[in-house]
Length: 65
Image 1 (spheres, rainbow, N blue to C red):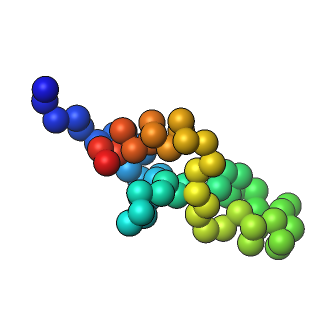
Image 2 (cartoon, rainbow, N blue to C red):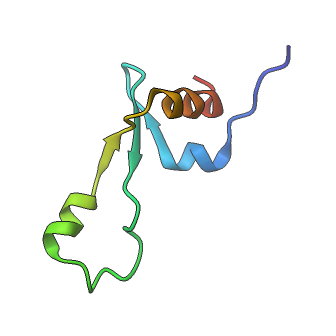
C-alpha cells in the first residue's frame, strides 16, 4: 500500500498536539471585524479542540498521523 499524501488545505488549518488532539481555528474571523464586538473577537481568536471524534479521526487521516 503506498503512502498517503498530506492534504495541503487541512495541513494549513489544523494542528495536532503532542497527545494527538486536533486543534482548529474559529470561523467568522477573517473580515467584517468592525461590526463585531471586542468580546466576540477575543472569543474567536486562538484555537480550540475538535469536539467530534469522527471529525478528529478524519482530520488525522488527511494529515497523515
